[in-house]
Each structure stands twice: as C-alpha cells, then as structure tokens.
Image (cartoon, rainbow, N blue to C red; front, side, top):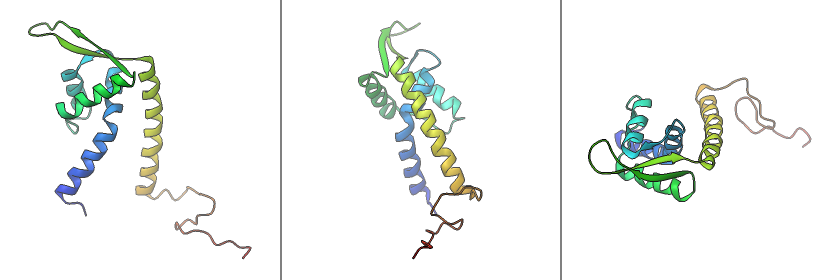
Length: 136
C-alpha cells in the first residue's frame, strides 16, 4: 500500500509527464498568461492539480522551444507587462496526438483495474498466463 510519501511521488511523476498536455489543452481555448494557465488547470481539475511556477514556466519554455506555443509581452490592465502564450498549429497537432495516446492509456489502465474479462489477446489465457503451445 502507498503511504503519503509514495503517493506524493507517484502524483508528482504523473503530473510531470502530463503537464505539457494540460497546458496545451488550456491554450487550445485561447491565449493566456502563465498565472491564468495555472489557475485554469486548477479550476478544471477541481483543485486536484495545482501547478507551481517551478513546474509551469519550464514547461512553457520547453513548449515554446519545440514550436508548440508562441509568447509575446502584452500590457496588463494594471502593473507590468505580462507574457501571453498562444498554441501553434504544431501545438494543436501535438495536443491531438497526446489526447489520443492518453485515451488509449486510460482505457488500458481501467481494463487492468477493472479486470476487463471480455478482452482476449492471442497467446494469453483469460487468467493472464501465457498459453502453452499445443504443438509441443
């Protein structure tokens, strides 16, 4: 069983691998500054995902370097200028690919957790054992 520390580590690793996908998903709805992206992810996840600056801004920088997002400085209603991020066509294509991969992954994990008794993979018995070659 996972204790608190192990659970936090698992959550951190899941978050790290999926932060770019969440950022692209938020930006697919329109341009946004970093703080707004973080708050929107928090809102959509019902508070389960809270991105800190140390996670969000390196992710945005990486996405920008890969051509998935662009950024420019814009005046804020009050205070200093802020950087506003936009998803590119490449970013939209990447989001589509990541969304499809995520759907397959979630279905696979759900099948493992739920047992998925109706799924048959050649060479694997329903109990999960490797089938013996009847020709032997």
